[in-house]
Length: 521
Image (cartoon, rainbow, N blue to C red):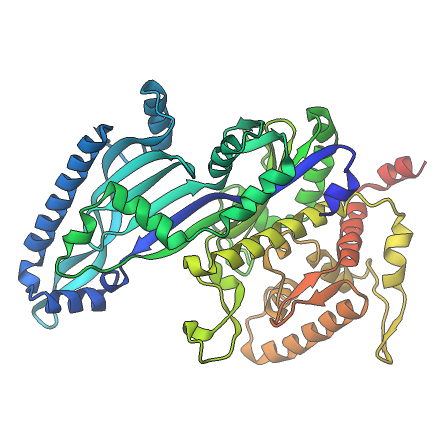
C-alpha cells in the first residue's frame, strides 16, 4: 500500500480483515412459493389449514426459546419497537450482570418480514400461497462468544424461519489477542495500538480459514435447539450466505498529530474524486440511477456535508449497493472500508454450479459462504486501490513530470496514438472520469464510460456507434499506460500512472491561478 510506503516513519503498522459480517441462514426449500407448496404437499397439509398449522409451529418454537433462555439463566425482554438500540441495551445488561463470556440476554420484538400467507385469487376463485410482506415475532439472542466475541443471532419465528447472525472480526481479534497475551488498546471496534501488529494480522488471516457452516450452525442450535424438530419428520439444513460484509484496513499512526496534519489533504482529494451524483447520495438524495444519471428534480447546488462525529470525518463512494469509504477514528487511526451487499458485480474462478466435471471459469460471485474467501480478496483490493488513489495526491513530482508523457504522441505495437490534451473539452471529460472514486470498487466497463461521456443518449441506433467510439478512447488510454485491462473480465482499472495523472489534473483544474502562483513562488 503506497500510503504505508510514503509515511512509514509516521506509521506503527496496519491490520486488515473483516469488520462486521451479517450472515443469513435460509431453508431454501421454504424460502419461495414453489418450494413451500411442495413442502405442504409432501406433508399432507391443505392450504386452508396452513394458517393454523403455522401458528402452532410458531407458538411451539417461541415456547422453546423461552425455555432455553431460562435454562441459560439470561435476562428476557419484550421490546415495544424494532427501532430500539438492541446492541446498546445488550451491552448494558452484560455490564450490569458482569457477563464477559457466554449468553447475555434474549429479546423478542415484532418486525417486518417476507413470509408465506394464504390469499384468494379473484380470477380462479381459489386460495393460493403467496410470499408477501408482513410482520412476525423475531427472537434476538446476544452473546459474548469465547472465541469470536460479541454478536447476536436473530430468528424469524414464522415461516420460512430465516436466521441472521451478526459478528465482528475486530471483537474476534480481541479474544485471540487475550488468549495470546498480546497487549493492545481497543476503542469500540478498532485498535489504535497493538503490541505485535504482525501477530495480530496473522490472527486476522486465520479467521478466513473458518469452517463457516459449522460455526454458524453451532451458534444457531445452541440458542434454538428445537429448530431441528420443528419440521419433523423433515430435517432441512440451512444454507448460509453473507448478506453484508465490511472489510476494513486500519493504518495506525504513531500520534494523533501525525494523522491530523495529513488528513485534510486526504479529505480534499477524496472529495475531488467525488462527482455530483456521489455527493447527492452523501446527502440522502435518491435521484441517481445505478449508472450515475441524475433523474427527477435536481437541486440548484450540491453540497458536501462534513461533520465531526465520534467516528471522525468520512468520505464515501457508492456503486450498485457496494461502497468504499475513508474516515479517521480514535485520533490516530485511518480506516479504509469496503462494504459489499451486491456480490454479482464481482467474479470468482470456480466450477460452474460447483459441477467439478465442468472446467473452471470466471463466474459471478455468490453470497454463499463458499465464496467468502474470494470476497475478502475483492474487498482488500478495493481498499488498496482507494488508498493508492489517495496516495497519488501526495506526489513529489512536478506537473510537467507527471503529465508530459501523456501529452505527446506515443507508439505501441507499431501503431501511432495521438497525444492527450487535458484542456480539450472531450479529453478533459475523459481524463476526469479516471478520477471517479467509484472506480476503486470494481473498475469500469465500456458502458460506464459511454454513460459518462454521452449521458443524454437515448437513441438505440446510435448506441453501437458510440460504443465503438468509446472503445477507441479506451484503446488510447491503454496506449498511454493510464489504464489496464483486468484479467479474464471486460473491465478496466487505473494504473499508478493513471492515478497520478488524473489526480494532478483534478487538483490544478480546481485551484485559482492566484493560488497556483503563490505555490509556485
